[in-house]
Length: 394
Image (cartoon, rainbow, N blue to C red; front, side, top):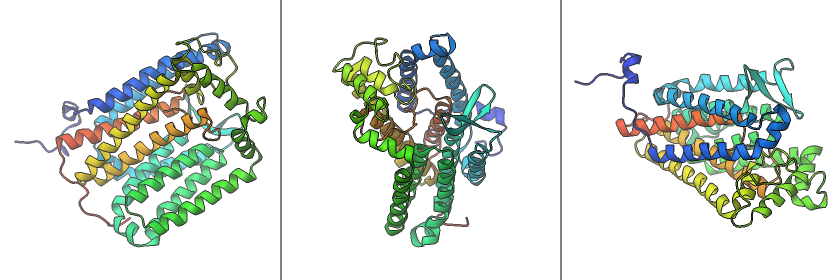
């Protein structure tokens, strides 16, 4: 005789054996613990200067990792149908966070950007949880409105209005990088879910023109763009970060200068422990080490995409679209961070997932990983379709 999990007491559910994707978990733990080692090296000088303790930032990152681990455990025991049913409310939560951070007495400003809210000992970067909330809403919407999304412009327009509002709030902070990641992730999920190509192209073209217009009409964004195109033309001002990053990567050569022996992290390279941690890693571990790190991210992305495909095959479409969105988000953010470090892309304030210092980013990324592990568990334990019916009311 089997027990219905819907009426099973919560303590009894905790005794359920969780089926974990060991390969996915191993990749994540490798990136996480390897990231702590890299961060310890990259931040030791700035930590000593800021707090008088060489491992100040590592300790704070470790606390965030522990909070993230607790989030993973919680997500492992929350059925995905709960997240699906809560997705409209989670959207409201995400929008509320993006609005509240703009309130002068609440939002915390750093370097001219108002992106953080103080919560106890942690400054929460609101774009991180808001991105996950928006992604869950989009995944739920495309399941509920599959028919309308595929057959009418209105079905495509509804999530685009929500997405436009989120991007507008992010640009008001301003957080141009987060807006790009949110926009690209949502569009990819909608495209895979069956949005008509003409609707997709129309909105993508409009968004691209809008983003270019913002970049060209904003003096500081224009300065970043010109500095990226020719950093050596002004190596002590607009091109300073990129030139120092390129020097660090060049010094690494094939095998690197060795762990802890980076010179550029000694106050030459700005944000060496956050946005430009990859440059420090490349200096200390060289080209071969850099390829190994990139390979780990590619393996993580492949594993997540494989999970999304398995969920789609089992007709668990909410889980499939959510996994696809999380994979796109992590993969795109890693690509942008590495691209910025090597000079392929203009400077953006985006961390390297699971590696760079950024407590909000680390906690939310680990929560997302916890959801992926829960999806795997449900596919192993019970692969019966739960989203067989498409369409429905909004």
